[in-house]
Amino acid sequence: MKYDSEIDQETWAFIKRTQSFYSKELLSYSIEQQRSEYNQMCHAFDNHKPYKLSIKSEKWDTIPVRIYEPKAPIGTLVYYHGGGFVVGDLESHHEVCADLTEKSQLRVVSVAYRLAPEHKHPAQFNDAFRAVQIAAKTFPEPLIVAGDSAGGTLAASVCHNARATNINLSGQVLIYPSLGTDMNTSSFMTHANAPLLTTKDMLYYKQVRCENHVPEDDPTFAPLNDKDFSNLPPTVVFTASCDPLVDDGEKYCAKIIDAGGAAEWINEVGLVHGYLRARSSVIRASNSFERIANAAAFLAKKKWPY
Image 1: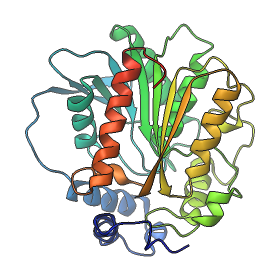
Image 2 (image 1 turned 90 degrees about the horizontal axis):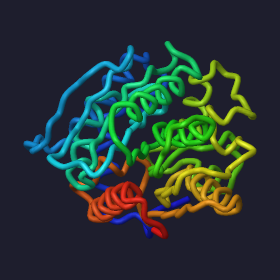
Image 3 (image 1 turned 90 degrees about the vertical axis):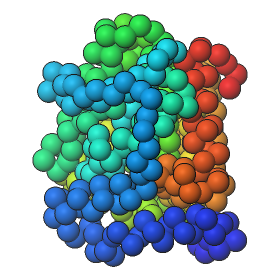
Image 4 (image 1 turned 180 degrees about the vertical axis):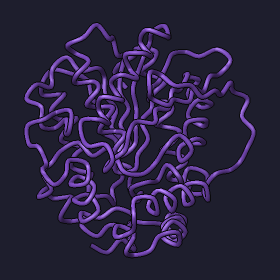
């Protein structure tokens, strides 16, 4: 698919700048090289501005977390970073979480879950869920979860699993999440070679996470594989229209609604995977980031419809 008519010049500039940090053979690099280049790329989009927040790093059990706290938080948001379960950490998403805290006025807990390939599934899910358990005991309600890309997978999986516990989640905000294992959907084919994320990339990340055996019946791996979508918290899913993962977001919201739940799918036209990093340079991405922060605050206030 050609994107010239859908992607504006600001977004193309963001794409080209992002690609300047990557070799076309990035996935053949060592894991250490992939992580180093990813973090360098993320930091290139940082604004290095001062934040009027309390920011502290802790370990919850063995899980590193960073807590961003405004003066009067309206609730707590547990955030899972993206990076295909292979790259990303507290540093790569530091300013994303700080900006989200400022705009939503939520306390944000950023979680550095274990990464593949050193740690295979379900290590990432186990860390994600443990972080929510500790957050629920540490902070007063409301409590919501959010994440981008792979982090969106974890946030949704946490919500599905939390139904069998006494954890009360007020909502989830998923940002261009990967939610299923079916890579034969329309968007995976139409956007197979989309800027910044391709179908080939997704296949690589799924296989690395599970050592080449992709489970088809495990909702802690892919929430769309669950058979029960009832009793999930109110959900807002943001997708980028130029992204193989578009259909995942649409299908997930449809399943929640069909099960009697509350869900809203927002497809951001002309944006690409990873657009959170463009929130300061691309008007479309900036507007979407405002909507993301507003959705998080909205869910914390336990309001619906969105």
